[in-house]
Length: 413
Image 1 (tube, helix red, strand yellow):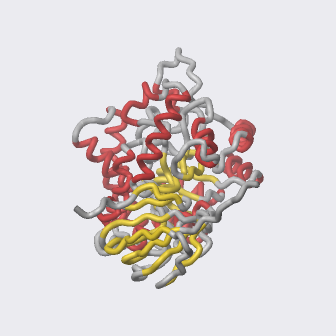
Image 2: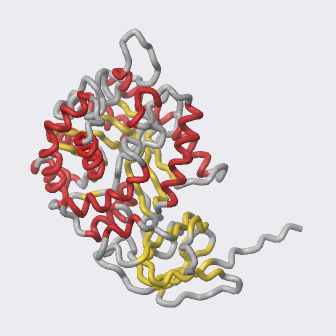
């Protein structure tokens, strides 16, 4: 006879806490974790026999961070050669990056596209979910859908005589519907599209639309019929407006968004993922002359407009979710998005909500991004008060994912 022993649980004693939804810290609290979920949350919780006690006095405990825009299988610093790596190589490197990022406190990642003819991020998501390998929870849009010569058409990095299957552009509603259906067929959680050009792709421009209105509608209508939300890489204000009117769930970057588009997003409940640290990284690379000429010219032209757009977003009532575009710059810098948000004008509590409660709302997940009974026990902690000092988000010392302790503070000397 097999005897199954129940989980006695873990009690976390918190010096302070942020629940993922509030405007301020909530004070000292205790959390009882059992069977991968938060069972109790109160000033004093029950202590089942055999329960482990973790003392995080002097730390602020929060839900695990959620990054809503990463690329685990893309490396912008070496893109033209890295894209030629095998699918297995991209997946293995992506797994290492995901685990390194988990150690920084990011327990859920939305990966928005790999430039690979196979499905490496789907495989990673499934392997992590099946506990075949360890890593953060993944929500995946497997590929980026765009038109010929758009930001999604990375084959423009290579001479035309090379027929490399790293991009599969679509032109016209029929081809677009086929691509969306294929993403659904093989397991994408989201559809990722692009309706303007980008800064790191040659031959296109963030200030120009790359979908016609009927093409953008074809993306969104097909995705909606299949029950998939749509995220759109967008730059120009007109691109933001087109995407909102067609029903996307999130605007990614929104580099050049204007007041009219922000008002539309507020009214429609559209989320904005502004990837503000990415701009700081780009401007530093521009200063150090590390950018390709075509990228440098576009960023130098638009830098002031991008910074003003970020301030406009921060001053608005729009739903802002945390996203970095890591992969386009190192994952080790991803936690600096908090500081970039505050620099743009967000208060620290809203920045924390962007990576917890608001990000979970974007993903349609009521079971993560919050400290509450019944939620998945994705719990992290950092020393001090991150609302008073947002830089503390770069000092995560404790990580629990799904009730399993991943990282603990070093014992005092």
